[in-house]
Length: 334
Image (cartoon, rainbow, N blue to C red; front, side, top):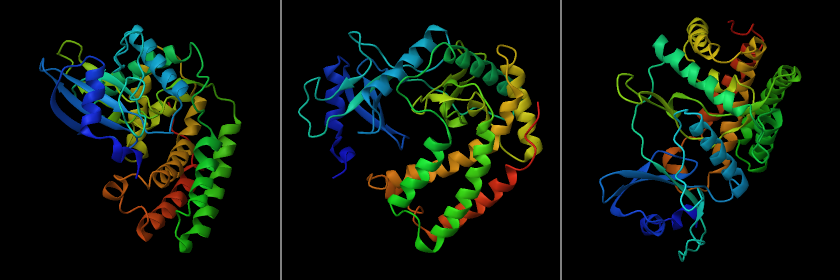
């Protein structure tokens, strides 16, 4: 039985009540594949978000570094959803708070925040997000993570390939071709990473789904960043490239708006633009490994039934071919 099958609604509500939250019994699962995240309604009518971390994914030290980064951002008045601190603690253990559970879960509780995904076709919104990202990086550069992963070719690339092979996740008829394309792609990625790039604490997974946008005319309107699960040491451009979409001209225009906002508060090294396509390639390889490592999760078959299919792996090979070509094109410009 997977650990998450032991995480029952009673455990969730009991954990919240043990911390002093008066829950009214209404509990809704929120979209999250890595962790289990729930919106719990309180007797007051307000809601809180309980996040139960995937067992054996992070160490306590890594999670606390994530929280420390969130608190530093909040202190700098960056609108990022940080966990509550109760009795001097932000991270809790179901066993340590006295619950009789077969599997111990580390969890945190955060305030509920509303919003929608930002319209990334709006230049004003892109500039606004760029300014906020610069503020995140201004805080991020003040100190380094000591326990969380570093974004590099090994952690996202070679380590992911080894995991996929060891887990026998790639169908035999595609394994040799896929591995050959990965090897060819990573040679180009390694060349890009050989150039010296500054590393700092970054969000790490800054796509539109991790930004809650509220109308500017409302008090506190604008972007609210969420989900620091993938916060790590990495180059600044990692937090910018996932906010672009469309053809090359469209992506370049979006990048310019983002960097117009970003550079109004923080310098940006244009040399990092050569990392965009290599970073996209690493994310693609890492995503397949992420899926394979979670194939025993009870939600996996429901949400990712196509992972083992021939179509999926043929698409990965085709996309790797496209990325090999893309990485040899000139980078976007600013």
